[in-house]
Image 1 (tube, each protein chain N blue to C red):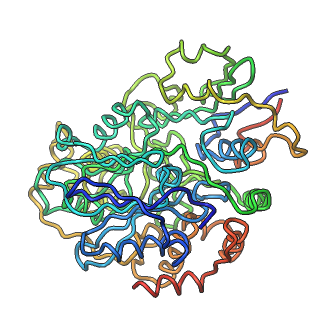
Image 2 (cartoon, rainbow over the protein chains, first blue to last red):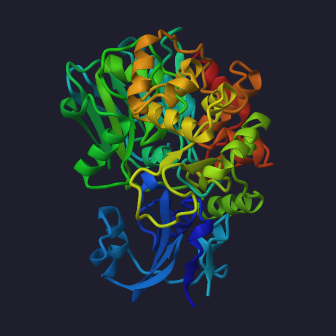
Image 3 (cartoon, each protein chain N blue to C red):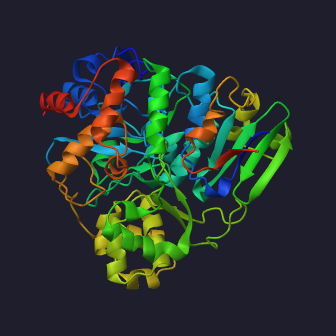
Length: 115
Length: 418
């Protein structure tokens, strides 16, 4: 079981990031989440959803999903804005929270789901 | 205020190049968001200030808590004018390490201000003062090595001030009818770049978090300008064949803004291909004018993109451009530049808040709504359309910062200042 994303229906609101960060810190920040909206190609309106686990990254692109072993994102040419996900904590599925992953709960478009 | 803001008030004097920091006591004296920043604006009024701030809930899980703002002098009346910082710009202000920023005085040569993590730098912009807003954004992001830096900028410094200019948020329109850009030009301020890695605390975090998610559950996600009004809905229909995806501002269940691809198929989803495939439409008003004049959607996109790049106010430009000028043009940007030089237009009369809903600039309804929106940091369109009464949002303030605000207290604070 892991958090996945249907990026094609994502509108880039970022609530998943802030909710995940809240799980970590009980505060609001865009820094500490295990899920990240990739929005570095703004001029193309290209945005994707990345979820980090201990072993890999789930990369939900609008054109399809992919699971990449850690490190592959950098090799694939991810820019500076993509790299912080690699140094963040891994998704723990919001361990200890009865309601499950907060990113899933916060997403208003049902982009994120557990499977 | 111990919660919901982090960092001092920064006072950046462009004349001396010095930056001072002091405790943002106005938060306690006047309340969060607009009123405390208005107090700062008033304090530095003689120095032609540009004040940048954010609302109480900006950057949290409260739905549509995207809203930051820029206060600048209304070029016509000398009163304060407010331009929204939406998309991700307001959030980056909140996390910038400053509770608010006041930029005063005029620089002797072009500069830009770089706000990040409680540090405010005044940096030389001479080498890109003549750049368009897109190149300015690219240059600053490249220099900082971070493509998420938010850049509020104005177009080329070309000494042509007979036509309204408009500040941009990154590559897109900001709803500035001209006052913020005019302030930037007066100050020799090419851009303000913002990136925040900060963190904000709520007084009762669990109750605040769970209440905000309850609000989210009550919202019905919708797309497009149809959310705004009937006129806007017609623009939705007109541009539909070019719509690639809809974009929301930070934290918003609704996605008002269509990204329109007119240099490649709108259905193309990958990021490979055309470097500049189209534009994100952040307002519909200029497009309505272009449609009425007989432009087709692709031609209209070309005009708007030129306006965005050149930092021109799109409604003013749309009022003087004709379809034949574009049909005969090999370079739309050059054509738009020429039209700008040949026409003298004043900045449209403005009330205190940029109007992007009804066009009823002076309506009491819009002013009251915006007083709430810029206090709370919640998009005013969302406040209208969410179906949640504003008083319910105000009730979150106690959980957020241990102080209960309501419309009456907010109005009282603002009325002390205007």
